[in-house]
Image (tube, rainbow, N blue to C red; front, side, top):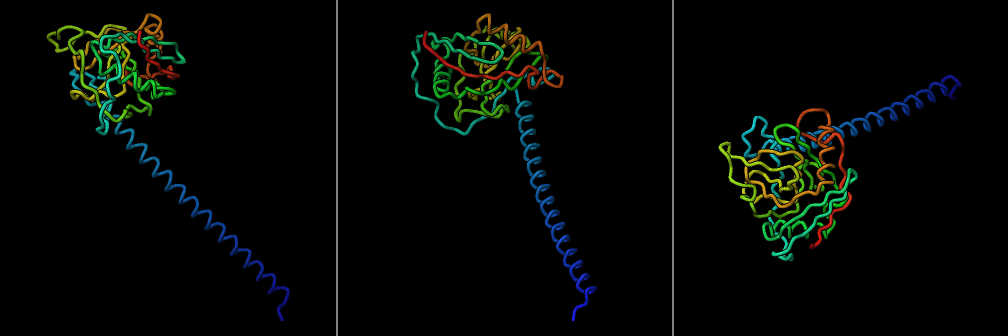
Length: 256
């Protein structure tokens, strides 16, 4: 016959075992969570390293090569079929939460670039994106056009370089002046490697003539970008995410 003391001890032992099982289950849960966090951190660090590597690529001989506008090389697929009038002028309207930017484009000078922007804008490719990069040292540009917001996004095809002599002949430093208001294609420093990323020049900047200049901002748009530039880079420095975040709400392209 089981005494009350034996019964009490048995119940206490069973309670202790149940508590240990719960503790072990909790420990396993924490270990699994830590593994997930560690894996996510590793992925984030790898992505950050890739972005840094993309930013460091370039054909700029300045003291800070990261100031060269860059994008990444997409997986090869054909660019959109030509659907714009090569003899016409087009207007690209970029609506942002920091002000609207109107860009005048000449398809006679940059038909492939204008055609691509028309194609992507019609698909809503640029809508609800951000301008992910601001440079305030050596050159002064705001870079946009990446749906991922990381500097790694692209439309899956590349564009040929166009109008590279449109800003004049390079000087002894191998560069030309990109006047304030110029809109040009970012690339990977390799020929014909433009995708969807573009940069808005808010102050005269010296760059190698290897970036397709395809448009000019209106006065109101230039002023809006200048205010973003004046606010500086998040965390300080001369190259990084703008402190005054820029959300691109909608982009449209229309024939004039």
